[in-house]
Amino acid sequence: KKESLTNKHSSDVDKSAIRNGLRQPKNVYQQPLQHKQDFCPPTFKHTDAERDLIKSALRRNFVFSDLSSRDLQPLIAAFEICVFAANQTIISQGEPGDYFYVIQEGKVKFQVNDKTVGRAGKGNSFGELALLYKCPRAATVIASKETRLFRVDQMTFRFILQNQTKQSEKEKTDLL
Image (cartoon, rainbow, N blue to C red; front, side, top):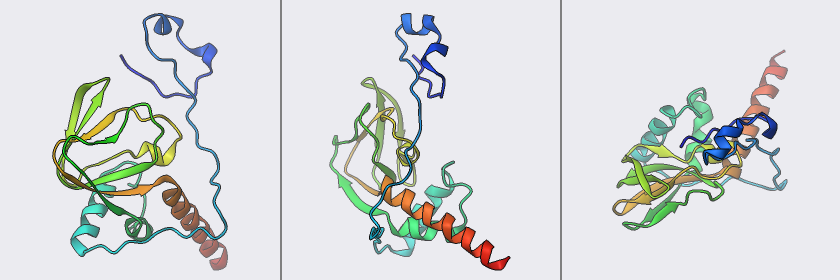
């Protein structure tokens, strides 16, 4: 069964798809960023190898492909390390998204409706849609063995990108 994320109005949904048990598409959007005036994104110390691993994973992900190395630096610094034991659930299908992850060590498996649909290891990333949209997780992610991950939360991600956009616009205006 395929689930489509579209901006179709419910009256535009194929009625036969509903009869056949497919889930009805939902609007996908993100509310404007609401943060406290004194919000300061966290920063964590990383080794050169850790920064390179995160940067490499970001470069391979469509969400970050257009960001410059300069734009990536504050984002890379905001990734914190977390560890999950073997067979521990990292993400549960259907729950709201909150973090984006990069695998430092270990392996994970992806399950949809309790069926394994993929695996990932060192240098791979997952959960990026949580950064862009307020939508439920499409899959459950489980650590296959002890797994060390880097993660960044949605608020931090959006705050950093918003500030970088403002700074870039200011630099352009100042230049003019």
